[in-house]
Length: 255
Image (tube, rainbow, N blue to C red; front, side, top):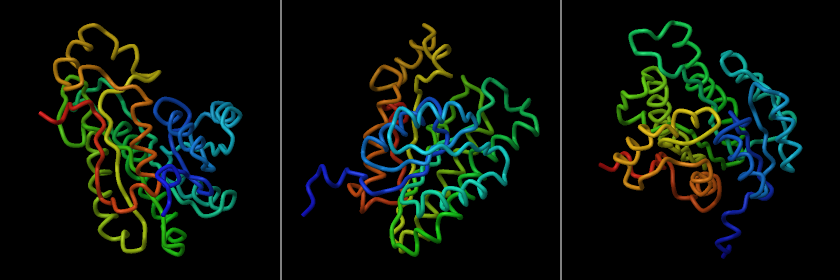
């Protein structure tokens, strides 16, 4: 029987991670690489990817703009050619036009949000599915959000919420169709997280008070709070888990 530590190991496995250049994605790249995986790291900013690859052994840059609906297919072809079959796909890239009220979201915002947050994850999963099916194994992890299941209002993001809700729904449907082939599909739903993009807003006193009042663990999340969830779903420790959403929100959605 494998030891617990061995079941968490990703030695010999290959991952493809989108949205890797900053925030939670950058942390995910570190966690996957330190667990032993070869990690194809994907983002628009090539220089940021090169810097990350220089910092963590096993990270291989794949610059791509997933707002282009054809970019996912090209990315999948390039990753399979350079890295070989992918064991772990982490759909983490996200587009959000923060602060735009629902009635003001333009067609450009709608298209960009859906292309990055929903269409590209679908195309990537479809492209990587044949090799996963042939090998009889794989783990697809979709990074969604608590806004997929609850309204927030204070941070207007209607189309973003719709895209994440769609990604959670397709997580369950993929699991229903693909788990028979040894492929597990799950999602991680973060709550309020401090990143380089959110820090200015999330650390305002009134926002801190609001988060504290509404979260059972009265603080916002840090990127390292998601290490365990990612490693659990990516590794053999979750070998009997599929079609599930692991919510990491400090208890925001528990009441």
